[in-house]
Image 1 (cartoon, rainbow, N blue to C red):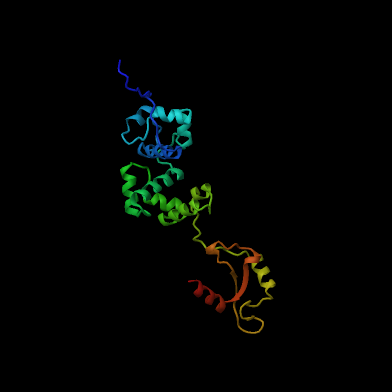
Image 2: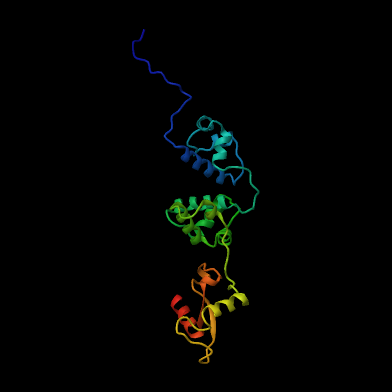
Length: 227
């Protein structure tokens, strides 16, 4: 009898150094490749870039379904804008380019994976590629929540209109004179304007505490400095 020491091993159990987060990322990657359609364990096992088998995933997450749920994978309607999916794709292109993707590189990637979006989808929903990249970094740094990251961009192209009653209240608060130079229609030929202290274009609210009285000359000077 051979006295050589025998090494006991179970062939069908393979160890992996991948974390759960790594596996979830791979599931998401395959989900994108499958054009956001639910896929079976058999389809996963046939994928040559899979890090581990579906059986190993089943064992690590208690069930295959639990793993998919943790990856946020579920049936979706083709063509409908899905911010989570769009962000995942954008991050994948960012990693592939090793930098913020250009419009061309994003479109090329979208075509490659047959995604139901174009760069224009990102411009419309997120307010542009650059804005989305900035928001992703802000979320990474904990400055905004994930819900805020996924929220659609709201254009503020139309200038805010100050109601007449509020305008009157501002003029009365400032004694109907410019808070910068003191000019008043009672003393000279002066046109008074109601101005946002924090510009409306930068998120300043249209309320009494953020409004002030300026003469047209001082208001123009303020706008020139802002520009």
